Image 1 (cartoon, rainbow, N blue to C red):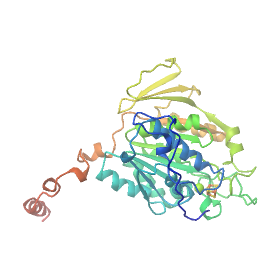
Image 2 (cartoon, rainbow, N blue to C red):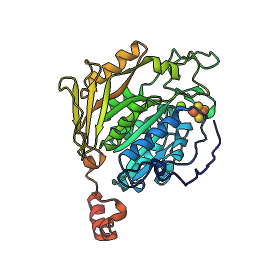
Image 3 (cartoon, rainbow, N blue to C red):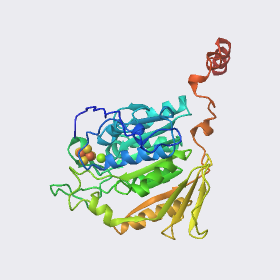
Image 4 (cartoon, protein in one colour):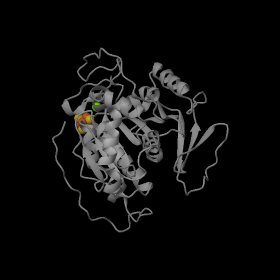
Length: 354
Ligand code: SF4
Ligand code: MG
């Protein structure tokens, strides 16, 4: 674990850097210098988030990044330095995001959490954010341990995976993707911090998805859980990574140019008109069938493999705003006369309760 320090990066950059539709470079999507250990998977996920937001031409003021506590939850400091941000307390990222989201539906919410933050202290909060179909991207940077407090086992660590010093892990892991599917998440994916070709399109699709988008990213902790017996190490995940699909993300305004075979590819259109073309690598896997998705995860896990890719999608999910029929406008844009219905209305509500 490292203490909190904020080192600004130099703001000058080369004029020839590639620019997106907003005229911005990748550098404009960066944050402060990372103080995580060199080689930590979380820095690769940070880089993938930066790339995804750059490629989606997202303006910084439309993004809110929210996190809890842990090495993972420090990561938002290292991306999107010009966006809104809230580093909350341990396990409380979902409720803080729920409040912000209900007040302002116009922002893209990127929640960052860890396996400690989500699978233990924050498990109840996680469950209810999923159940309520909060429109957000929820990323777990999953290393099977509490990196910030010296590497204790977390609830996602495999039973077969001992500590660095050889101490056995007595408990079975919580599989957050299985939980998310069972609780009603409409977009559930698993990936690996070392596979940016898979991770970047998944993040772009998750941001474009309206509803609860969950991304469990195996992200090795080089300091405490990257030893030869660990199942969350770079070597183990590289050797046991079974991609179930290959995903192309196609923005709304772009034509689908890649050839795809109807039989083995699944085209999915999202609410905003963008499309995902899923090239199925595992033919028995159907990403629109929750039972099949659970079977796929379990089948691979039983063989000691990690199934990665877009595991499940329900493209017609209704999000929390649809369900509660909330204001179309962010609350800060609603005039006081509408926000406050007045004392007569209040008296009539009170009368109904007597
Ligand atoms: Fe934290 Fe481990 Fe990453 Fe170091 S390598 S920053 S201890 S998660
Ligand atoms: Mg962790």
